Length: 84
View (cartoon, rainbow, N blue to C red):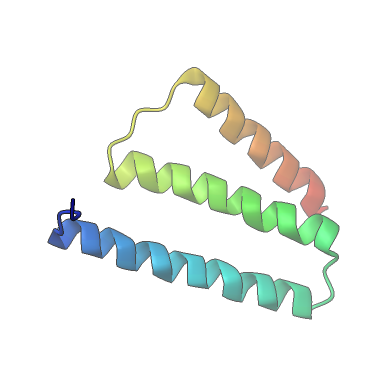
């Protein structure tokens, strides 16, 4: 069964590709400056999680549960601790 194709779906797919590409470029820039992988990777991944959650809430109108909010707060805490 073929997947239905819509303009909105194509837009989301293109935006997803752009943001994945930006994350990769960011990681190359970070590691080229000598940041250790043990702190750079969690910060980049954590930032992606937070950014993805915000995009889901704003554009896709996704509802977050208290557990989701707790997870986002924990990710922020870890990113702040690792960034020091």
